Length: 286
Image (tube, rainbow, N blue to C red):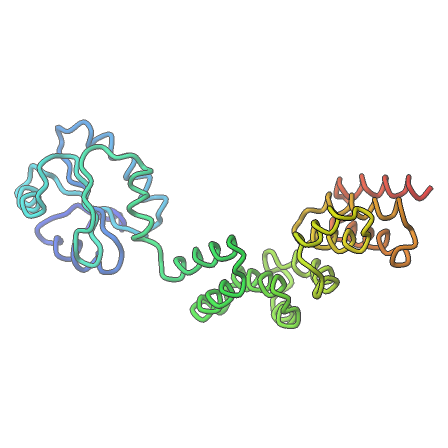
């Protein structure tokens, strides 16, 4: 084997180990090249960059086409020209690319081969979230957490999903056992109070429809503002609350102004948006 663990020169001694045994553990990319081949030389830095970026997720095996082993394997694989790249997975050639290839083209083949089962489920979770299927995403996420029970990033994602589906008690219980410095946990903790305010409220689309029918529906506007805070649409939320303050201070016993103060607290004292709307609120009050 070569001293570089992710790049090897294919030889009579290691051919079975590399193409059969190694490819059962991770994909092997066989680069068939020749010294006289200019496109082969152009392909080399692209391959080297991929090896570095994938950090051991695949093995690059280099085969000199002019050597006896090269001639033998080319005949077995039906390769007639160089450069040719052959992808091995689970001991079998699964893809052959002839000619100089771009990095994008190589990634399109490598990505499905190098992704772990856990990573594959994570991608499915992301897709379900994008489609609004939060309950299904939670079920898949629980599968991943069985494999990675101490993955705080996944647990924070689980907290956010639990909040989205209204399972506030479950979200609180999970937040209670997560460390205070877990990346991303501050945001759901800050938003928990807002989720509690709208646990039984209509969704954003329904509230927007109500306002379209009656722009003086302060209750719909108030609940919409809370939904907007949860969705990180803070400026729209503050505009809606400011409008309520401007038109009806008695609504919810000055509830719109008090909610604005809670939004300011979540944004932080130094936040430019918080400063701007504090000024607008002050001007309106005085």
